[in-house]
Image 1 (tube, rainbow, N blue to C red):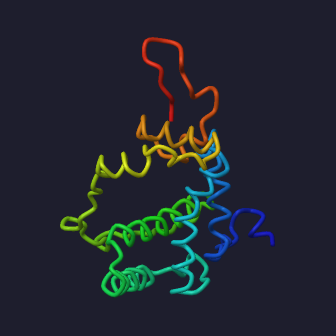
Image 2: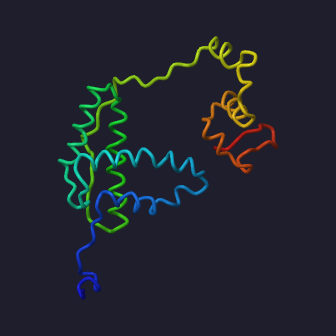
Image 3: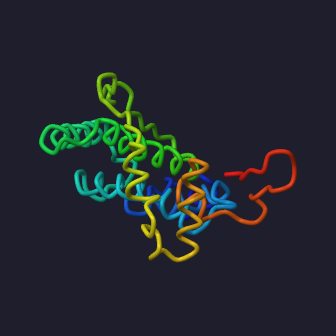
Length: 192
């Protein structure tokens, strides 16, 4: 007890199932001004990545995480890419989310631990990620056809029309506050 009180005790190493709570607390300031839905959507991929990692390597203390554990995650993703046709980008994001979460928790807890995915990322050079534009004819026939939007409530209709005219995402429009809408001045605009 005396050694711990004087700073000589061993640091407490959280287990993987605890790291997200530590991470969320450490990154609270990054969520200022975001809606609850924006925060939920930002957290979801990190939560998914950590759950995948725990399912593979177990609920270890973070000081027990090895490079082999990251190799296990990479190999698991390699199999999913081959068997399910998933993208290498998804795999890379999972590995980055796991490593960056662990690095931030180690920093917050002042733990001298390294978590690296160097030379483990999948090459995305030849992976097609270009989205094709929606054909004008489809927009005219489906969205702009008389009566096509009659069943939408006014809020959903407003979001859709704003999205079409600005290119903003539906979630960005739905989360707008009055302070982000600028109607005065030479160019009316929204701040996202």
